Length: 480
Image (cartoon, rainbow, N blue to C red; front, side):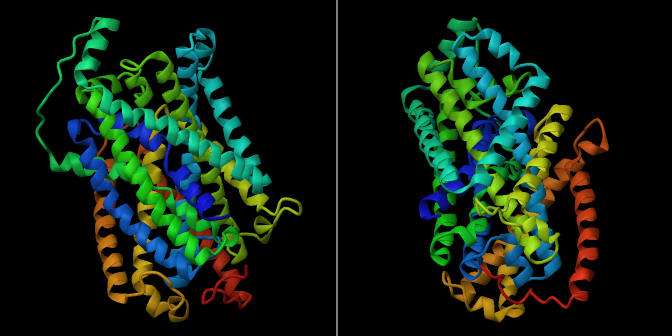
C-alpha cells in the first residue's frame, strides 16, 4: 500500500455519516445547539489533531499492524495497550454495523427521487433495511479477505466519486442562500419559514455538542493498522495520518458551512424531530432534481466507503492481539492465497452484524455513535499518555521516532492532548448518564463499562498464560 491508498483508508474511515448525517441530526440529539454547529465542529477538531500527532509520532517508531495496541502495549503497559485497542475495536466494530444500517435510507431516497416509489417504499420496511445492511457488511468482509487489487480498486474510485459529488454541496453554498431555500419550500409545500437570526450561546450545550462532533474525526487511526502492508511505513504512515486529518477537517468545515448557509438552522431542528435529516435531503429543496440525486448518490457512496476501510482497521487489531498470544493463534492465521488475516476479518463481520441488529431494535443509531465516542476518547487519551511515557518505559523504541523528535514538543502534545480529551470524556459521560432513556441499557457508558470489564477479565486470564510461557514480547516490535 502506497501513500495514496494508506491516506484513502484513513479518509474513507472518517467520512460518511460523520458529514452527511451527524451535523444535522445533532439538532435533535443536542437541543439548543442552533447556529453553533460549525464552531462546535471546529472545536471538536482540536483534541483530534493532538491525537493525530500522537499517532503519527508513535507510528514512525512502530510501523507494524496493530496501531494503538502496539503503541500503548510497548510504550505504556500491556494491559492499557489492550484496553486502548479493545476500546477502538469494540467502538468501530459496532459503528460498522450502524453505518451499514444508515446507508439504506440514502439508497431509498435515490429511488424516491427517481420516482421508483414501489422500491422506495420497499426499502422502508424494517426487516428489509436490516437484511440489506447485513449484506453490505458481508460484501466488504469478502472484499477485505480478497484484499490487494480488489480493495484498492474498490476504495480509490469511490473516494474520487465521493469528493466529486460532495463538491456539489460546497459549490451550492456559493450559489444559493436562505432566501432561495425559504422561497423553494413555500412553492413546493406552502410552508412559511421564519429564520431565527439570533440564538443565545450556551457553553454547556456547545461543549456537549463538540464531544459528539468529535466522532466525526475518528477514523484516521485506521492508517496506523496498515503497518505491515505499507510501503516505507516509517514515513508514509505518519504522513498519511496528518494528510487525512487535514483534508477531512477542511472538507467537513466547507461542507457544513455550505448547508447551513442555505438552510435555516431552526428548519433543520424542527425536521430532525420527526425524521432522519441528511444533507442531500435538505438541499433537494433548492437543487435541480438531477443534481439532488447526484448528491444523494455521493452521500451513499461516502457511507459505503466507510465499511472496507473500517473492517481493515479493526481486523488488524485482532491480528496483533493474536500475534502477542492475547487472542488464540488461529485468529492471526493468514489466508494461503490472498495473504490476508481472514479469520480476524470474519470475526469483525460478526460483531458489526450485532451493531446492525442493535440499531434496528434500538430504533436510534446515536446509541452506537455514543459508544464509539466513549471508546475512541479512551483510545486517544491513552495514545497521548503513551507519548509522554514511552521514553521512560521503552527507550529503545523511543529512539526509533523519526518525526517531531524534540522531546519538549512531544511532551507538550501529549499533556495538552490528554487534558483536552479527558475534559471531553467527562462532558460526554455526564451527558450520557444524565439523559432520559427508556432503560439503563440505552446509556452507552453502562454498555461500554460492561464490555470493558469482560475484556479486562479475559485479558487477565490470557496474560497469566503468556507469563507462564515466559513470552516477553512487550519490549520489542513483532516480526513483519
